[in-house]
Image (cartoon, rainbow, N blue to C red; front, side):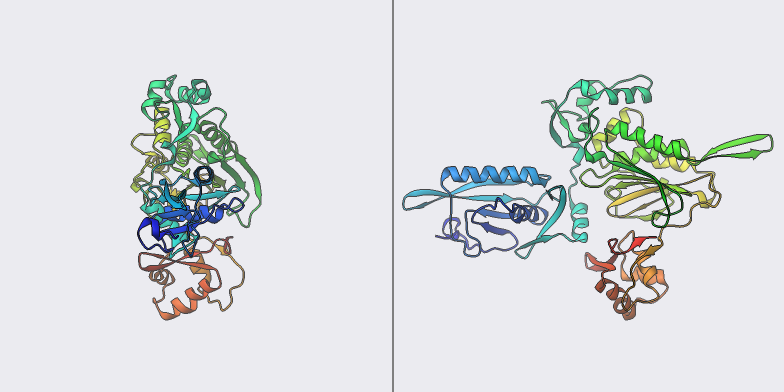
Amino acid sequence: MVLENIIGTLSIENESIECKSRLSRENVVSWLKTIAGFANSIGGDFYIGVEDKTNKLIGFDKSEADSERNFFNNQVNEHLIPRPQMKITFIPYKVRNKERYIINVRVDNSEVKPVILKMDGVPSIYMRRDGFTNGATYEEIIEMSINSKNTQYDVLFSDEGYKKEDFTKLQEFCKIHTGGKTLSDKTLESIGFFNEERMLANGAVFFKDDYEGKKTTIQCSLFSGLSKGSERIITINKFQGNITDTINYALDFIKQRMNHSIVKLGDGRNEIDSYPERAVFEGIINSIAHRDYYLDGTQIQIDMFKDRLEISSPGGLYRKNQIGKTYDLTGIISKRRNELISEVLVRCNVMEAAGTGFDKIAEEYAEVDDKHKPYIYSSSDHFTLVLPDLTYIDGVVDSSNPIVEYPPIPNGTKFDADVLSFCYYKACKASEIAEYLGISDSTYLRKSILENLVKEGYLIEGKLSRAKNYKTNTDVVRLN
């Protein structure tokens, strides 16, 4: 007996159907990736107890089917983030008057993408194509994120219960910044901090006194010169803790290591710090409030250089295309990536409800010359705020297109370095590259320059809609 005999339609393995006679216990990735791939594409039907290729029914008795379903559920819960939307049913059939069952898992096209398979601490993203499940491309991951309904990580509920005594640091933080006010249980429940069953939202867990998970990791580094690649690292510290401790740690790190200067005036002197206190504060709060907490293995980066401070947060600007580099901070319309975390920070009076943090930073630098103007650059996977050091007289050297270093390129051209620099932070179309290089969008550009760089592994070719684009392979090409 084959699958078609009991479901009434011809079923062959394609992009939306796959069969397994049994779930492998030794290699769970071999079938979990199919569930993730279905969820990340158009959905599909996963049949357990059916031999693949032949669609022959192997089946289970009732107790075996229960055990197989429980094993499936446990592995999905442990390794797939977020859990895909699925419906699991038993389909009965008879063999010699004995009832047997196969299991059908109907996997929906996930509303929250990408669904990530995490095994031994290593995250992977899969996509279903033409009956096969393979790793998702960089461009597919971006498109999934853009097209996702973007259910925010921080508002999903955890399995941890609310206890008032677990949040003394949050209450003290609130007192300091509000002149003595605290957050009542009624207020916390009203903003979704916990639900009617008093279970904490994911974002609320990050405020617990004893939280030390990796989701809030921050790395602070001090460099002796102007770049990461060619200068000595003076200090590199990594911190994991609750959100309020993370904010205070970052502020203390910068305050203790920034420079101070004195400008003599006609009738006195003016003391200048490297970075305006309010600009630093707004930058740190912004990075905490808007980071993408779905991205495991990432961290907020605070890098202090001779001429600038960089605050980099995982995840591009929320619901925006990458913007490259911009000095127009007031023109960036802030959209909340994390509603709950942002609302808590608003209630603690450290964040404006209207999202005017970038405006405040621009105000602090309003009187400086062009060499000391702050700016933001953003790609699909991070955004970075750059605050120039006001005590460094030369200002910030234009770093929108960074200096890069890489191994010798076979059949290379004189344009290679410029192309790799231009495409380092964002994917660019051939026409954009041609305009930047000052040459025509010709066969020479596409064949001799771009195709060669793709062939040798220095560029990654992608596609958005129908247009090809090119992104520097940062595993090969490094910042100088």
